[in-house]
Length: 314
Image (cartoon, rainbow, N blue to C red):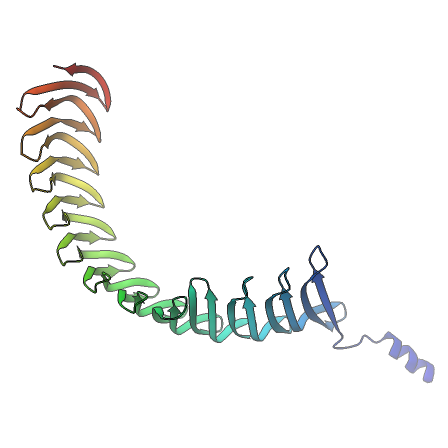
C-alpha cells in the first residue's frame, strides 16, 4: 500500500506551478520579467506580475496577468520617464478610466470592454484643455470642441457615428469667425463661408458630397474681389474671372473639367490688353498674341498642345 502511494505521488503533475521568466539587453542589463503558471501539464499561461525596463534602468511597463490576459492596473512609461498610459484591464481589455500622455499633452477618458466611451478630454502640455467631446461604441459622437492655449475656441461641431455631421465653425485667434458650414456623413455639404480676421468674406461657395459645386467667389485681404467662377464636381467649370487688387480684370476665360479651354484674355491693372490666345485641355494651343502698353501687337506665337511651334517678336 505504501509503495502504491509513492508511485501515485511521484507520477502526479503539480497544479498551479509557477515560474518567473526574465530577459536582458545585450549588455546584461534586465529588460523584462514575467510570471507564468502551469494550468495543465505542459501548458503555461501568463499569470502574475510583469514589468519591463529601458536600457538605462527606467521602468517601461508594470502590471499583472491573470489566466493569460492583462488584469488590474497597468502603467506604461516613455523612455524620458513621462507616463505614457495608465488604467485598468478587465479580461485583457482596457476598462474604466485611462490617462495617456506624451510631449504633445495628455488625454483622459473611459473604456468599456476595450471600447472608448463617454466624455474624453485632451490637454495641452502643462495643462489647459485642448479638446473635449464624447465617444459612443468607440466612435466620436455629439459635440466636440477644440481650444487654443489661451482657452479660446478654435473649432466646434458635431459627430455622428464617428463622422462630422451638422454645422461646424472655426474661429480666428481674435475670436472672430473664420469659417462656417455643414457636414453630412463626413463630407462638406451646402454653403460654406470663410472670413478674414476683420470680418470680411475671404471666400464662399457650396459643396456637394464634399466637392465644390456651383458659383464661388474669392476676395483679397481688403475685401475686393479676387476671382469668381463655378465648380462642377470639385473642378472649375465655365467662365472664370481673375482680378487685380484694384478690381480690374486680370484674366478671363473658360474651364472644362478643371482645365482651361478655349479663348483667354489677360489684362494689365489699367485695363489694357496684355495677351490673348486659346487653351486646349489646359495647354496653350494655336496663336497667342502679346501686346505692349500702347495696345500694339508685340509678339505672336503658335502653340500645339503646349509646345511652341512658330512665331516670334514682331
